[in-house]
Length: 285
Image 1 (cartoon, rainbow, N blue to C red):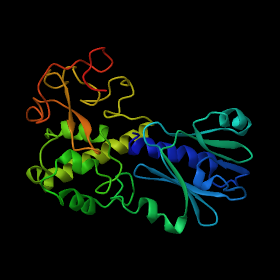
Image 2: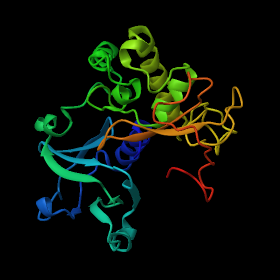
Image 3: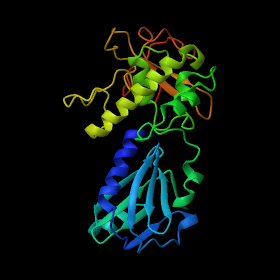
Image 4: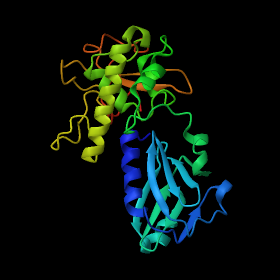
């Protein structure tokens, strides 16, 4: 699922392509809004909210979407509208006289009154990429359940919005924190440091225009400490990076970590040899 930085870049792309222009037409391909006509409305702005996108139009109307695993929004010259719209996975087309925005494979798409956006994003905690991010509220949310693992607490978008497995695994490694450690054992100071580190990494990724941990322009394929590096040597100690499930269904995830740098094997890790992702004998997808 795209994380906060990818959603931020998507919102920026849509805003730059459509803001200030009137829509000449729309094609919303979800049953609840199939008859909606957005033509004549001017795009005011497109903004991210955690992993959600809010495309605000004149007349107190917002196109709300969530990319989930496979979704995307792209902006193309309007002349390509018919060809692009022929894809069976397209869920929305919004076009001006010059450009067309194509929402493909969207996990969520609906229309809400802008004044009632709280109905779709009001449950979210403080957004790490919001200029008005409130660290004290986010911290209090994460600390509210001291028995919960630090990973689960940070991935819960009701606590703090924008973090996914990448921007949870990487700060945990950088700070030497065990992903399965209960929040109460981690402590308030370290939790705050974790959130601040995640925020810096997300902001860096937004500035560079790609998901990055180091920010180095010469690093692309392996620009991570642990995420995606199962079976490969830790860049600090050489121990093979591991992957293990965390959380309970339906919120179960998998987390990358170094058992040497981060306090030992996970309680859900049997210690068996794991091969790098992409190899035929990989243990996890």
